Amino acid sequence: MGGEKSAVNETFPVTISREYPPAPLVAVAAAVLDDSGRVLMVRRGKPPSLGMWALPGGLLDLGEPVRDGIVREVREETGAEIELVDLLDLFEPIHRDAQGAVRYHYVVIDFWAHFRGGAVAPADDADGADWVSLDRLDELPMEDATRRVVRKAHGLWRNGRAGD
Image (tube, rainbow, N blue to C red; front, side, top):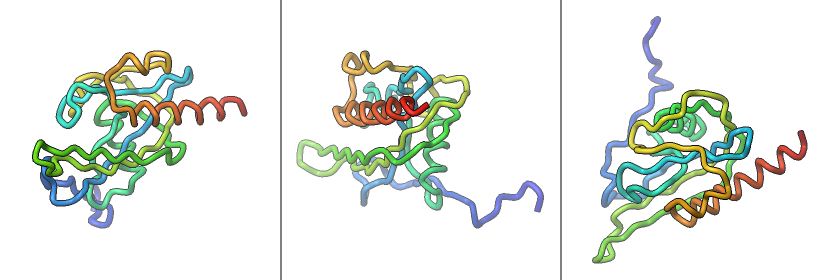
């Protein structure tokens, strides 16, 4: 039994098409804040939103608990080790093609988290990774909903620091 993965805890990457999916896809992401209040962001290397800045995250595997999926995705995309704090928001990007058909549909569960270590660098499907201060947020191309989620996480982080 040593070294064998338990079938009870086994997870399976989602293999259905991300483009024109038969159903909405469940994804996870995290607003990871460091001790100075900067948020860890990635530049997307694949559609949708190619080249835009986003929170690190990705598709939840079948059989994977949400919190485990967030930790895995952040590590895969950035190398960062995190400590989850709490549920933050829900983001639902729906992209339609010129004919009105749903080309992409994600339901993204956003948490906020503290950075705990690791050498941060882009990996997996991210082609950039950087720590972004709140005053730089409007300079970067990103979805308005992403800015809203980052500001919400920063407010919770700031309120939590006031209690230290």
